[in-house]
Image 1 (tube, each protein chain N blue to C red):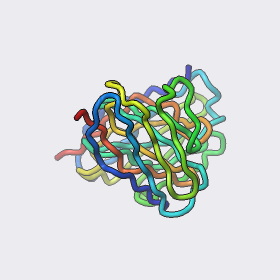
Image 2: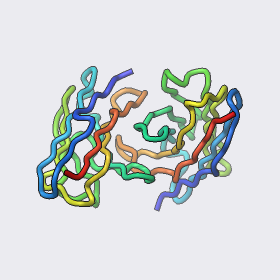
Image 3: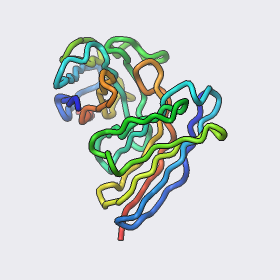
Image 4: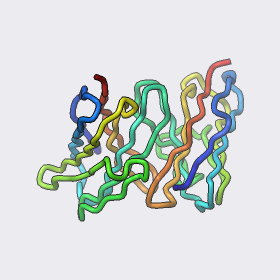
Length: 107
Length: 117
């Protein structure tokens, strides 16, 4: 299986900060990389698909980049509603895998 | 709007099996793979596998091979996930989910399965 490794596992940031989360795949996955946001007690929400495409309805402060093995999710100006856990997920292989998650907390 | 409605919470003893259902509506059931994802308390998301509702073909994560069975009934647009030989670390919320493009856009409400003696 393709392993997905996110960093950091958690971070503390303030409203208005620029936040970057990275995701590394154990082998090349082209651009088959998606990003999700999850809040406590809720199902995950798709933010970015195919590495850099913003899902309809997601604020433009979210962006994704990368290809091959290294990917980045950026929140350009952190808002109060963005405090949550973020997951990357690969769909390159027939067996999908998620990263372990990055918890974004209030500083 | 796509709807995925799952069966209710379950409590099972170690060694037992559990079968979770996922009723799909407002889209063509046979047109999209159904995925199953679980999340243990306080832990991350874990992909379990998918079923092709059209053919019945399946693909399971290696970790669950031999313990998980995914099936479907196209007449009632419902997918099922059965996990056998339950252990305490199978306690989790189980989600059915449908992808759009390469990402999962639609999720069921989740089914809590508690394994306890």
